[in-house]
Image 1 (tube, each protein chain N blue to C red):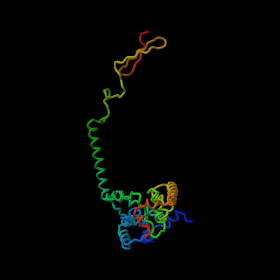
Image 2 (cartoon, one colour):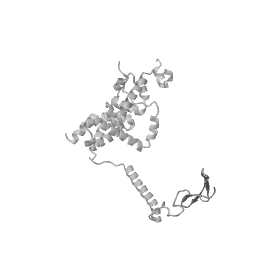
Image 3 (cartoon, chains in turn blue, red):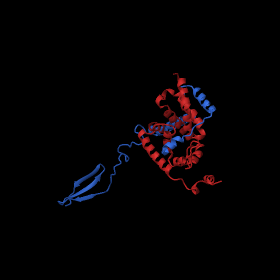
Image 4 (cartoon, rainbow over the protein chains, first blue to last red):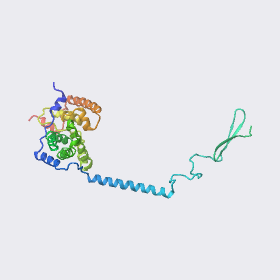
Length: 121
Length: 176
């Protein structure tokens, strides 16, 4: 019994190509200069527009950086409010009582948190 | 053998196969796809492996057809039409079970159908078909096995009752 796949093989369509079409394809191929790769003009235009766009974008972002100096627009001035992203609370005091009865007062300072034993016991 | 001789032999041996494959890719542009394929083959004749000429040509034809689809806006309408489930490749004239074969092929995904027909109709090995489709040979073998199983199941499935067939088929089956 023939398998469905063999039926499929046997059902391959035979191509009857117009001899004129075939001859035209042959002559078109052999008349093409060897080594010349045909470039689609639309592709050329795409590349040109891509290069122009990238150049324009680079110039647009480079100009503010040059005005801001060598640091660039995202570099903060040391010591300024922008110089650290660490949250530094002000006006917060914590009192922690140790098991031996010592009370520690924690007061945030501009340079960080400092804990010093307080005199409360 | 000169360059011209090699191209002549290539053209004589493979043009019909390339045209047949191009017809499956885009029946309305098969002549152009075939011609473009052989223009590229002429230009890059030295790059074509002698033992893998047909896979190389079919790969090129597939790429040419794909480029045409992308760049030709008019194809959108045709592709929308081609996406309907009734579309299936032409079966050879005079095949007794052409309807069954068409139905079984239509049951496959387009990718599986293309792979199956590359092997069944274009005579490629699974590895050569993998090259044409741009997938790994192992992947192609797995997909081919799956496609054959689905095809055979769909082939053996009983046909739809006459009432479910299109009106024209039902009309043809009525006794005169």
